[in-house]
Image (cartoon, rainbow, N blue to C red; front, side, top):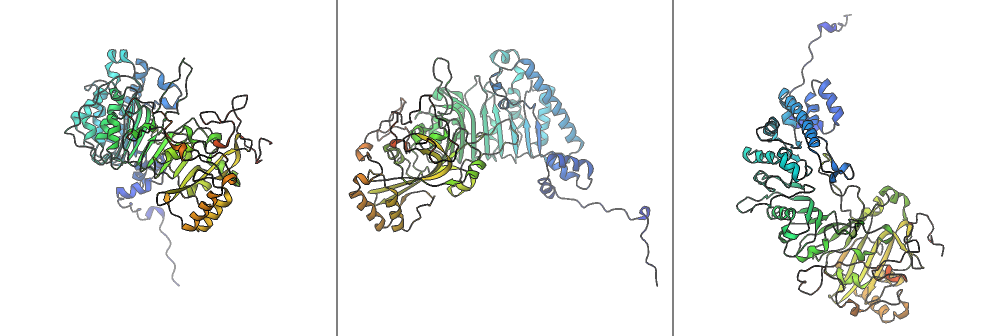
Length: 617
C-alpha cells in the first residue's frame, strides 16, 4: 500500500501565477458595479484588480472648489468679494496640483477619465495656474466624453476692472489657440460669464461630435453679442440643448437671447430644447424664428413658466418667467411640451383656465409642473376611489383652444423636486417629464386623457377622462378628496352627455368606457352615433347641465394677446385654452376669472379625510 504524498510546505509551493492582462473594456465593466469607496479600497489592496478600482475612482476628475449657489438659498444674489474669489481659486489650484501629480505617477489613470469638471478662476495665460489648466486639458482632451465648465458668479463691474484675473476670459482664450481636439466629447456643460470672451466661440464649434449642450449664463452682468456664425460648420450631431438663466426682457437687444438664437441656428438637428429664465417671445425674435426652423425638434421644456414666479411686495408685481403661449407666434413642430405653472394648487388641478399653450399642430402630450403634491407612494397607498355618478361639463374655452392643437390627447400633472438639473451638481439625475397613462394608477400620477370622436369632420363627440383628487361638492365648492378618482367630462352638440347615455354609446361602439388611452379624430360605428343623436333630440331637461352652450358661444376670441405684434392670420390670439372650468362651470360661486370663490378666510383647507362628503352637506 503506497503512501499518499503529502503536500509540500508553504515555503516549497510554486509561486502564484499573475492574473493575465485584463482589457480596459473589461475593467470598465467591473468598475460599473462598484461605488467610489469600494473602488478606492480595491485600488489600494488588490494588485490583480487594482486597475478596475482605478477606473471607477478616476471616472470623473473634479477640479472645482465646491461652490454651489443653488445649494444655499439666496447665495446666488450675493456679490462675491475679491477674497472669496481668491479663496476659491486657491482651492482649485491645490486640486490641480494633486490631480496632475496623481496622473503623472500612474499614467493608466489618464485612460480611465470619462468626465472632467473645472472651475476656471484662471488669472493670466502666462500664470502658473493657467498653464496647469492647459497641461490638464492636454492630458485628458483625447479621453473625456463629458466636460463641465462650472458657471462663475458675476463679481460686479468694479471688481472686474480692478481684478481682471477673477473671470475666465484668459481660460477661454487658451481654448482657442490650443486647439484641443476632444474627439470623444459628447456632453458639454458650459457656464458663460457675460464679461468673458466670445459666448459661442471657436473652441465650442470645433466639438463636432457634441450631442448634448447645457449652457448657463452668469446671474448678472454685461457682455458681448455673439459674432456672425457664417462660415462655421454647424453642430450637426447636437440633439439636446439646455439653456439656463435666459433674461430676454428686451427682445433681440438682450445678449442671452442672442446667444440662444446663435446656438439654435447652429444646431439644425436639435430634438430637445429646455429653457429657464425670462422671455416674452415676439414674432420677430431671432431665437423664436430659429426654433421654428428646427425640423427635428420634438420636445420643448419650459421649467420657469410665466406663472411660476411669485409676486414680491415692492410696490408693483414682478412679472417674470417664459411666456410659453407666445411660442405660437411662429409655426412650431414639436410634439411634446413641459411647462411649469406654480399657480395651481391641487384643489383647482382640473381647471385649466390659467393654462396658456401655443398653437402647435403636432403637440400630442403636455406635462404641467405643479406646486408640491403628496409623494407618489402616498397616492399609491390611498388607492383609487369610485368615480362620480354624474359626468362633468366642458366649457366653451376648452373647445375654442383645443382645436388649435389637433393632436393633443394627454395632459400629465407632475411635481418634481428638481425640475431643472443644476450646473453645479456633478451627478444630477435627468428628470422624467413624461409618463404614459397606463402607469398613472400604479405609480401615483395624475392627469387627463382627451378623446375626440368624429364623423366626416361634421360631428364631434368629446370624452375627457381625468385622474385626480380635485372634486366639486354638490354645494358648488371645490375640495381635495381623500383619494384619486377617475372622472368623465363629455360634450355632444352643446350638451353634457349623462353617464347612462355614455355607457350605451360605448357599448354600441364595442369600446371600453374605462379605457385611459387618448386620441383625436377617432371613429365610432353608426349605431353609437345614432344613440347620441336620438338622445340629443330629446335631451332637454335630461342633460346633466342645464345651461349648456351653443356654437354661438364659440364665436370670437376673448383672450388678449398682450403683445404688440401682429395677430395671427385668423385673427385669433395666442392666449391659451382651459379644460376651462371643467367642473367650475357647474359652480354657483365662480368669479369672472373662472376661479371658485373662497370663503371668508380667503382660502380653503385641503381635505385629507376619507369621507366622500367632507363639507358635511
